[in-house]
Length: 153
Image (cartoon, rainbow, N blue to C red):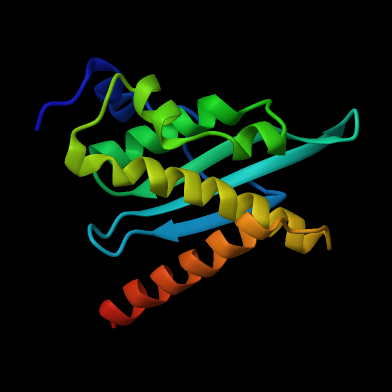
């Protein structure tokens, strides 16, 4: 499989990798088809009445594309507001990586889902309103994780 130099750089030198002590939000997602699993950890601060992702880390078990999309996602959202972060699209990730093979594009969706889950976790722990699109995405993620768990019993 041919990967861009950017993909290989993020794979060999992942940014913001690792678990975070006392995160404000944690997101865990998995992909039924390929078995990749990602965790995203966020630290949040309030600035000008906006929730800002002050720090972000990830832990990913998966392929080259899964690790690379996780790494580049952290760079795209670090220091951004929730609103800005929730507007990150798969094409933003793919373009930042200089492209992905068609069969690996699902990894960009997985990284976004992990971020949304971390934001969902933060909002729910703090009894804050959860936007409908985040709630719907959360229900899909829960369903996918259950299928993976049942498959691996």
